Length: 212
Image (cartoon, rainbow, N blue to C red; front, side):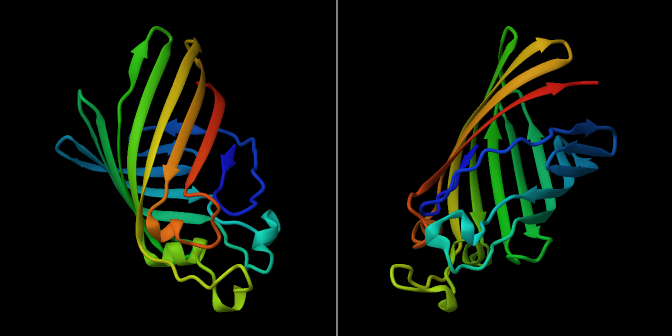
């Protein structure tokens, strides 16, 4: 379940399959795929492809009536991962491979898993920078889309902050249940959009995983 920040947006709850696979060359954790590159010392390097379900349809909210559809897409780029005894640090730089927004995004994240019996707790903190093209596509208002109460808006590059917590429970040696909570505080380039009714976005994800 994800609460998008658009005005009068109809919150959506979806069920999706979880697929994970890893070998020496690739790592698959839906909705993304990594191709493993030679490491640079302790830093793991990856080529990355990931689907992001950003965007909306005009029918998702009365306020969005008359807006062109904003599509999600496949993002392509690279990532670096550094695992230490203190925490895990990761960074990724991705570009919109679908060409919908023609945007670029960069994210750096720190997380650490704590074990307590059959439970695991993984808090995370992330900063995400997105360029002007990304903001303009997903949060901008073109002149042809402007109307009374919805002014034209040209996006600006901005940085958002995400905090989250993932809790997992080992039901059996090959079975795990998890709950993931996340909240994102948008940067001013997104918050200033007339399409938004709030300055943050929250999400809740729950799942069951069986390992073969």
